[in-house]
Image (cartoon, rainbow, N blue to C red; front, side):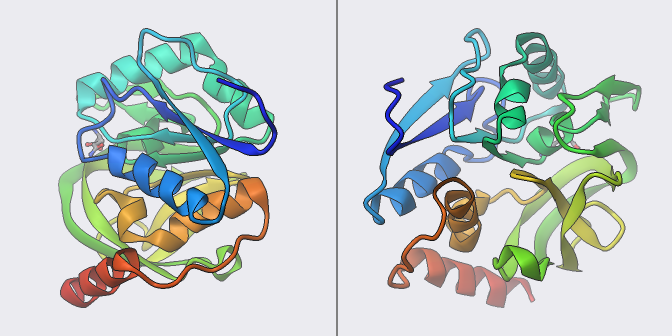
Length: 236
Ligand code: GLN
């Protein structure tokens, strides 16, 4: 990666293991919304055999099935790069399996607890049922994101510890399982929203950009906002 302070470095973690649900859409929309503001970007696809660079700005971690999830968590823990990046203030956006493995622990397919990367104070374990379907949630007001929508498909349920905060309260769907959805801690954010989440919720992409570059200019509403409105209307 070229290291210029004016380039936003987007790091896509393990597309070979954690990209079950069109997660690349999150990478594309983040890049697009940065470039529309005149922010130069550089995107790095980090496969599970590669070291995770520490000097990225935004790290995207996608969803995955149980076994790839375990493999990804083991490799991320052994590598240490994602934790070092989060410790130095990088933004992290993690979806579903990604959300669970950046936490303190998560359950394997027999619900044995396994250690996570430990950058978000959440613990996940298997629920009695699978949570599948459209989800709608209101993000906590201080993040300025509003109502979000997505598709959830997970067995795990997530309890939030004292250092993290719920991302949102659920209007429809299961999410964490206590009427909240997702969690954040500093600039590390996890969510059960697939979809992919950022194309369906441009305001979430803009939150990640604001975390890294400060205030950003508003954009003319385009297909992203239309998709958001359409999915919201369809879900409720
Ligand atoms: N394997 C995890 C679960 O079922 C995550 C699934 C996912 O990423 N959709 O809870």
